[in-house]
Image: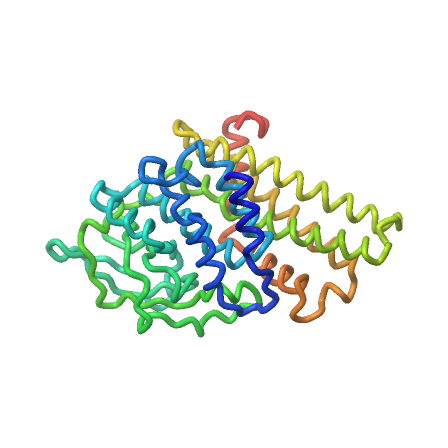
Length: 359
């Protein structure tokens, strides 16, 4: 990511304090500054952010920057980047051409993985059409995402498929009752009776689980987490300096500890993003990303705790910048099955009998 582009976007993006604020202005900014198309491969007119090795660091910096500005916005952009990656990996030439045209025209993509417990999504082949039933929950970007990649059950396994995500009668954002990440407009999306052309199928059943792209790709949302922690660090440091408390030995140590935490996470994630996005990355590299996720969560939680201790009641003022960051980051860190992810990383270390540097 060029410094000029990053500075321009950072200057334009608002600093919202409303947990449920619309992200329309911010998304339009990303469109105008070509951030959505930057995720496309270079040969499709993009910059390879998250799709090619040469775009890995730019993607990492973009996700951190958005995390510092608004974690809900970072979540939507990460979903877009993930969706472009999946189309690049598994889409047919015809599907890539169709989706690249949509993205070039300003379409925001998403990835919706979680099934509604009472209505798991199922796919049936009906001639040259794919018929869907069921519903997704925690579907982020309702009303903003134009196409979503979902996983649908088949007799052969979980099948990735691209669906239209902009039919308002199918969306129910009222099911999102979380204290944080409200601006993502996440919720339930019903796919009953929805049919799409067979060309909108992505790859073969269970391709989603292929490594190092599945677990390995978690560096992306971790980069957004890091951005949120960096924003908390900035707020804490500036607050203490404005009160002339930075020289207090206890408060000074908190600033130092928080700085160590964010830099530790950054170093782990730089390595994970760089190595996972290499064209010849081995499946085993996913263990590196899993360890980086664990480090990032611990570092973020350390920064949250240090911020609360340093600022006291000021960290809990409803509607404040700090309050929003705490709520959003605390929820965003609740990614699926963290214990299982750490166990898989541990298994890799034991099976290969290596130190983390050799993963």
